[in-house]
Image (tube, rainbow, N blue to C red; front, side, top):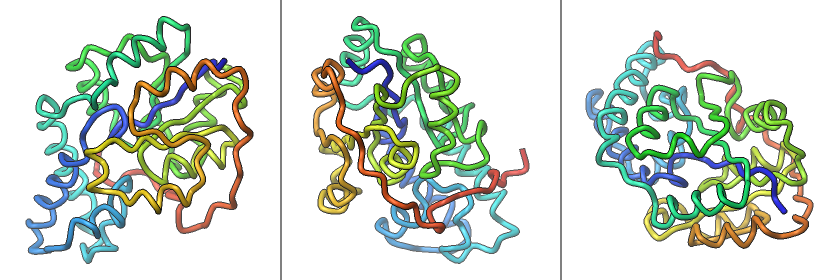
Length: 239
């Protein structure tokens, strides 16, 4: 049986991708920059210091990150859990599964959101962008969680909604799972996520309970991580 499950936060536990997309558009409008939803998802989602890739001068990166954080923070109360998440977390907790969150989001946002949703007591560890200098898809956040929890990699599962989660898990050498609920299908193509060859691919969070009870998990296929996927910089926001 799985001993530990590590969850991504945005797009996995909470249905927050629309919140982030709107926040990015708002920030970009301040610079009279109008780019497509697709570009925002591919170039900016999950990356704090990628503003230059959409034409924002480097000197404004801290300001952009500050404003992005503020907008997302202010939108917490209108950002719900994905369907079946709370029930699934409760079942996993009853099964004795250790649970954690591995996110590129900021700690102040995550802690406030967890408290608002009333699920903070279910997680034994939360690793945020403030806790590691190298973020997903680099394996460091996952490895830090495994070390802190003393969890064996072959009995730990990483679940998330994007390539960053799967690549991070593969590079940490642990089984992984794509969560692809209906709301996320507006943001990511199934074919691109399937091409990552995740250990599991689910559309309903409740399926995670049966996966958790498997006696043995498949050994993940480990791919070499391209250098341009590694974000080794601290978040530039002046904080």
